[in-house]
Length: 107
Image 1: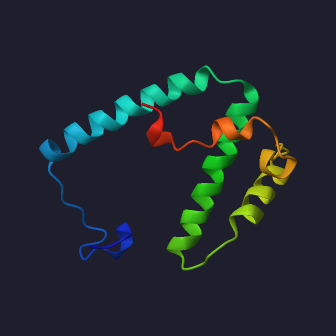
Image 2 (image 1 turned 60 degrees about the horizontal axis):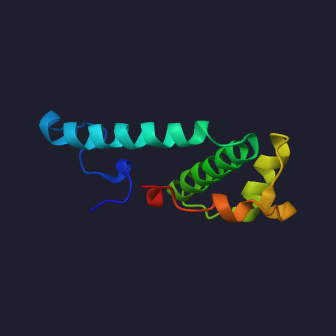
Image 3 (image 1 turned 90 degrees about the horizontal axis):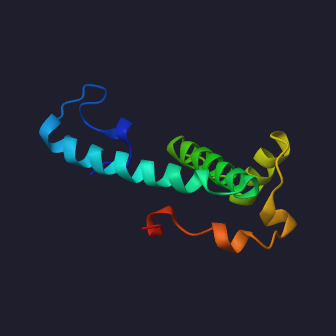
């Protein structure tokens, strides 16, 4: 099985079954709503931390698709610096331990 969508045999011709996807999409939307609700209850420091984490992960995954391996700490630091955000990992923010819980464990 391919790791990336562009490696599929029929790329970019997609075939899918709406019936098979409907339940999975409903589950994702439900979980997304729960996550958004939790994010609204967080303070601005936690929201910024979540954005920084998400952007870092997106860049790392995108570079992995291109065959490049980037250093997570350097990517994170660069994003924080360019976006004028505080990097709690670099600053050793005491609240970091509460945020860095995998999103899947927020049930």
